[in-house]
Length: 99
Image 1 (cartoon, rainbow, N blue to C red):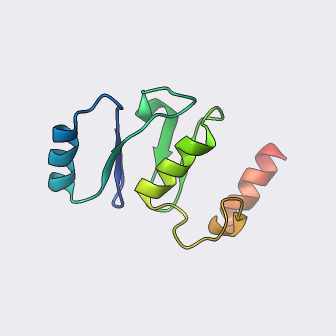
Image 2: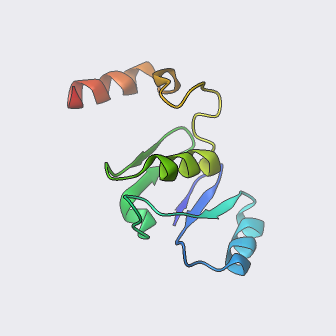
């Protein structure tokens, strides 16, 4: 499970009753998701806080979209490819590491 102040992501086999109970307890939206092309081990493939989420390289665009939607990541940004959603220092660090 991955939990932030904005939302929670749980194992895809979590029942609707369990998700409803968890949602009422923590008062955030809860969704069952996968990461890394269908892996149901959410905590091993995703790290998130209230401002950003980092997932494995194999995570599909659909999985990323669901993750961003539930955790309300990039809610103020424009298009999916808009790099302005990341703080400049974080964007520079990522670019230095991978480019």
